[in-house]
Length: 349
Image (tube, rainbow, N blue to C red):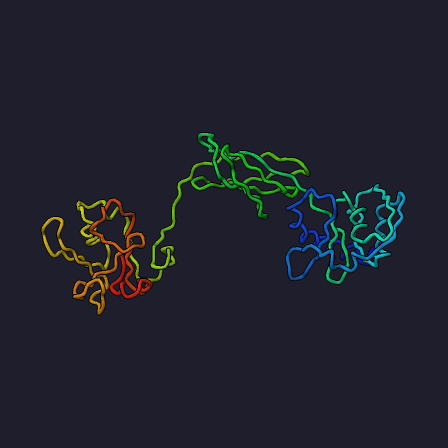
């Protein structure tokens, strides 16, 4: 065995660091029998695959003749001929493995692939050319069902995730889920779905086995954050700084009126509603939100100074709307209405 002169403590730290960096590389193909050749880079959290075509060291030709040699003896000879500094701990390699290989002008990468086949290790290189054998993390899988706790009904599209990883799965029409390539050991699972309280639990994942974990979620009332529509999108009310006022359907449906503009009278602070007539259906309402303005293209006489009315983003007329069909009305009083240009010089509804 060819080993760099490192103390056991330093060697342990080196292998642990490489193992953490390389773990994410295996999730895509955990069953591969051949070793991976990876490059650990200081500026990246994860190692990257080595470009085998451009690596002079890995393409170097060797002449090997192994007849019942131990794995350590084979690695030592490969390292000697390749001039490669190879670092590994004794418990990384499987014990009792014998190597039989005869080849002339075999490349370093082919030789290492042959002798390390099914060894469960990968080769991680550092920028200074040192190679470390890292034990490949072992994987299992988790499967089960997610149902409603009260009725036992399967929950469709519930999300089950493994804590501390990016491993997630959604349940199918029968409430079943499966998460593959889960590292062995104790893992934290969470199942969640909109309208139900999340459930957390711990499971033990064994190598090559499927762990079954079923969830029962209890219905939970959802309290939505107050969201206010502004001219360029939506904001939470607690983050709002502009002069924006919103009224909901309760302010409109609770009044004995059939006209939306009449229902707004006294409901929106700062909004002045003036009635120009008393005949039903032709009350001739005028709205004033920002006082007297110097320009209003919708009113050539510039007397009413009415705000711009947008219904689901499209200019419209409030008189044509049924109050019971309105979800909410937002009044933009300050610069928040400027996104609509001169048309909103008198504000926007």
